[in-house]
Image (spheres, one colour):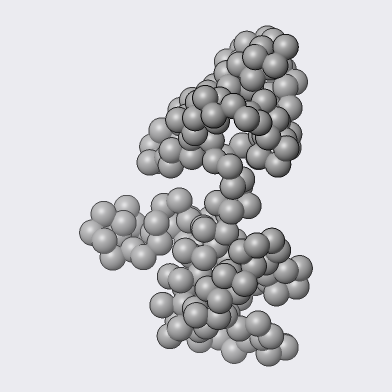
Amino acid sequence: VSEYNFKKFLTALRIFSKLEQEEHEHMIMPSTIRVPSNFVVPSDDFRWPIILWNYRLGEKCTAVRQKQLYVKGNRLRQQALEEIGFRWSGNATLGWLDVVHAAAIYSQMHGRVLNPPLQFVVPSPPTPDSELDGSWPWPERLWGLKLGQRLKDVRVKGAYLKGPDAHIRKAQLDNLGFVWTPKRGRRKRS
């Protein structure tokens, strides 16, 4: 049963990864598989084998990371997952890397002050040439990232600041000039 369940999980991950790459073929996709924790294989989608319809792939990924489901004590299975891009740290860590990368760019552009407005979203280039000539500071994978909201969540909810890396992440933000308690009221337009 265990081998069957692992192979089912591995197959689902491979198909998910393939479909993600097809969907974003115009972009350079990272080799890391990022399955949303609530992802369920759709039924009536013939790109997936019928046996996988309604399979809770997101939940299984979380269980593999947190409880070592299917892989406890089995290095070969762990390696098989790593080879296709499965990451043990989960999407939250990958999300933090995107946030801190965008925060570093924003901080550099704003005189080492990290206090974007709530509505700030990492923009895509105004023209395709901007990206090609190297003048556009934002990498494509960050386009559309709601940096203002993410940093508000850091302030208000302590998002990304839990667990063993919390002190490192706080120090990263401090080094970027993060404003932990912004002034209240409306901002002056700059």
